[in-house]
Image (tube, rainbow, N blue to C red; front, side, top):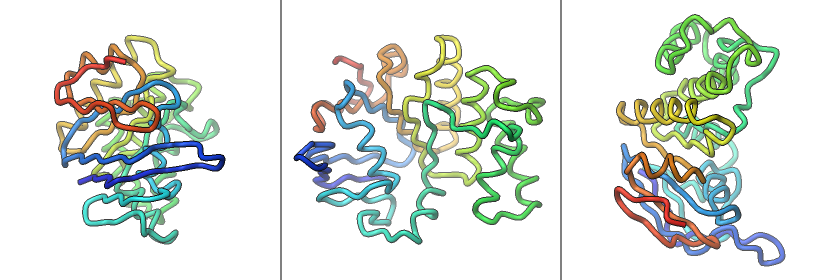
Length: 226
């Protein structure tokens, strides 16, 4: 499903983003990527969604070599890889329904498809009855659920959750992790990037540990040990 083959990203002044990364993630996996600040987690996400190219190596998503992707193909890639961020990135002047619909509108989806898909993903994330509210009328956990719903509208094969609980309290954190596990049970591959030790250790899933841009641990049913 996802494979990094000897991938490095070197920034100006010889600053290392990631170095000699070899990583294979199977379809349907739930993988936590952990490490201290500056360990390379964010760089790994940016490379995966083609936000920036690697300095060397090859990145495969399915049969797609995204190191050779052209700009016209990037929107198609990002429909295959949903992304959820720490800060929600919801549009404050649009309702929750409109925020989720916007992801479809920007790709030219018909009104019929929007009316069909948006209620479905709202049900998946448990926001029924709140679709006409605005982001600031929701709790932080509910806003993150809306962000997850928006990431699901294209039925992505992969969902990247980049510090999705960083702004949430413990109760909302567990709710979001439960939602990610539910989505994973549908067959979606989950890549959880986090510094939350308790979350990682409670999951008891595969843990990939980065340090100074390199993979220093890759353990099935692992723990956050750094």
